[in-house]
Length: 271
Length: 63
Ligand SMILES: Cc1ncc(C[n+]2csc(CCOP(=O)(O)OP(=O)(O)O)c2C)c(N)n1
Ligand code: SF4
Ligand code: SF4
Image: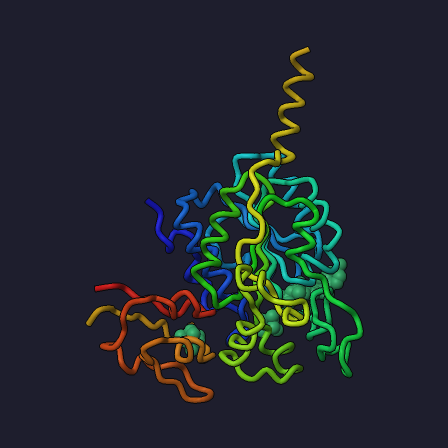
């Protein structure tokens, strides 16, 4: 029987993130989900890239590896295919996962690689000083959009859904019980499991957009969320600037890459 | 008492999330300071502060 404490290196705390940063909430949810699933720590690989969130590798008592910035899913694909018995968790910032790594995101979803991918969307590049990313909303103030951003952002959950992922969910970082549930479901799904967590970079995005202290910022993020069931009855105008949350895709009709490849190999070698 | 609350003070950065979101107002916090467990007897052991604390500084055990 594993407990939460088996998955964390307590001696490494306090962690390096700013007061109120949502990254810690995601780390906490992941560790709780691992304990819930009772996955032996030695069978877990946590993969990150570059950025504040990527520093997460310091804290879990599991295998961890940091890839080049944006190459989290590429590395994770290799790990999973080399040893399909491992449970591979890809933790990315929105810069890492959707901007510099956007190409890997769409193809990993399309190829249906059996990993769990979590993007902690704090709407900017936190580590390098709050520049805009591909998920920064139109009009937002960032270090590189002082008068407001003139680009539209990706709707990541919809993007990954369109690429054919069998599991997609989205929630805010304060929605902790659902977050933990989604991590478990995404892990148990044979195929690409994707979760977008709407999170707070208090130090840059929050300050730049005058969102107040950590609790205030979290509340504002919560107020941007609309549960999928409620969104169904809302107009496009009403949904402008909102994020539809909940379990958005849950399919069992797709075969993951690893399984298809193994089948083909068996067929070819049997000849 | 319905719950025992452990606050790892070294880890707390005083963000105020636990205090703001606690449904029973168990915590007090002053700007720039760490949180204090002011009213532990009011805790209903929902554990939401434990899961929401970004610094893994809280543990709530149901009694
Ligand atoms: C190839 C490469 N380009 C640029 C950088 C600089 N860099 C480091 S972290 C980062 C952005 C990280 O932002 P995000 O992934 O959103 O994570 P956050 O810091 O917000 O958690 C960038 C651009 C780098 N390390 N490597
Ligand atoms: S800079 Fe932003 S993302 Fe980085 S640790 Fe601080 S609050 Fe978190
Ligand atoms: S949520 Fe955690 S870090 Fe923030 S004030 Fe409460 S105990 Fe401290």
